[in-house]
Length: 128
Image 1: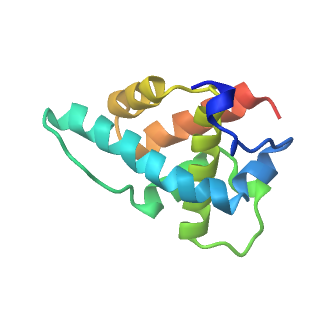
Image 2 (image 1 turned 45 degrees about the vertical axis):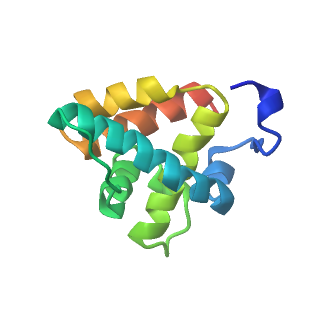
């Protein structure tokens, strides 16, 4: 995608701002479910549509040491939203491709590990 096709693309200067962006989380929900469904389809060998359980994303966020950047009183759904916001932000900014995300998820031993790897890669490449 080119920059001209995305007039809504947010610009943030910190990981905290990305993780707390509720509008990004909303878009991220659809994006994360898509890459998860494709990765799951690859693992199963058949087309599958699925939604990621918020506990998977919240565990991955904690394992990636991103939990500490968020307020204390957040439930697992809010933590999952933060993970979704970061994942879609890196795609919008062409930092991590859909294909790369799907490969990471489909080759990981489980989806918590896959999303942890994806979040750590996002954090590293953003370098904020």
